[in-house]
Length: 444
Image 1 (cartoon, rainbow, N blue to C red):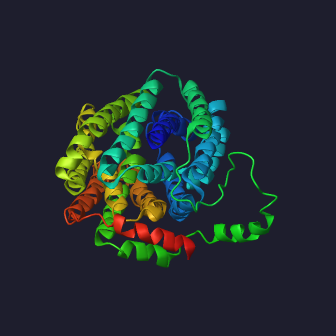
Image 2: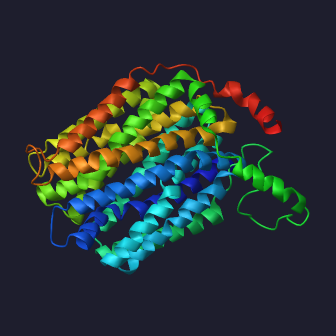
Image 3: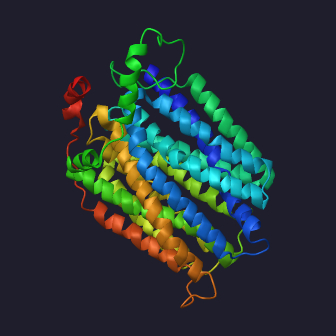
């Protein structure tokens, strides 16, 4: 019962955090354009600096995600969750105060610095928390519910943006980010993996620091040793063919998703003159369909079809909806393509569930961190590849008229992930075979 209570508080924390993060997405494109290119619907500078920001964030996340996951295995999920949830507040507070060019640049720089740690870490740690508390046979459904909570927050956040001014959007977002941090610290119980869990980084109460001062140098050295080496990560990837295949799928899937995210809003603004309200409408459709799918369909389909088949279904519809965006001939086509989220939202929970079943309980944080790190590496490559392509084909210098060409290329990247997913075969989970190794690793 205590574990279920912890999951309820985790879901509420994740909802509040995602609500704060997602509600600014429809507004940030207009804020960026107004700060850099006032009065214009096409701005190559905005596309380039957004792509550069995403690439730098991805590079930082690529380094940080395995470290964050590994630290959470040693110091607990709650302590590590506190850091990104708190850091998220500060960039939002800047735009809540003002959105002039100087404040936008301050936001831009602080967002890069904080997101290198925050981007993906909340989701990664939440997945590890769920894996700590849910049996292997129910993890796909549990991960689907976790994603469904994110989709529900996405719907509520973007829907609220539809009825708020830009200034109010950032003010409400800042307040919700603060509420999520307070709620998490007060109500979320830590996820204890075993009795050898190290002293938390952030103390919950009075500690025995005076009695244990002689142990401080050793503990500080252990923190610096928790960054997994490249050999450790390669060894984990090679430990299971299924894990390696899931990592490849994760890379190309994230490559496509980030490329779409970096290009789509600028494409729709230049092609159909969309603004904050149309962006919010589009995201509400995507979020509602995704929420229904993850909370209602996935718990039924995952046990019936298996994560491997469901992953392929999700990736097929992911590539299809990207291609529909790229050839949109009227303003209603993006709304129709957004309905495909009913199926393409299956992919990420299935990847995480497949990975979690290949790894022992003492390595869940490390494994999820490595997958998040691979996704972050895709976050670096994708903007560098697709942002210049988007800027070129939305400008008058395009070699031929095809405004959605970059999004078509994004769809091809998703198709590669789909083909690779077809090669993944269902095998018995091996994580249970590694449980006995945890105690050995802890005592070694």
